[in-house]
Length: 79
Image 1: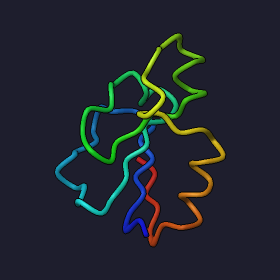
Image 2: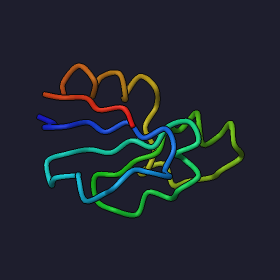
Image 3: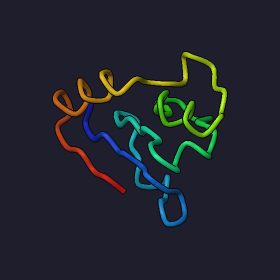
């Protein structure tokens, strides 16, 4: 189970210090402009494609997968 799901729309004021080991971070909208380099960090596949960004498939999640995580997470934070 995911403790906290972080949906990060833009990166300017997001602090990765807030993220615990059991958390998952999903970069969405303009947040996908940052490459997900940490364990448990992903980018929204459709948002990356819309911006012409090519990412390895194992670092991306579809809208359907993100919706699944929202249902399973104990807490969801949109940043």
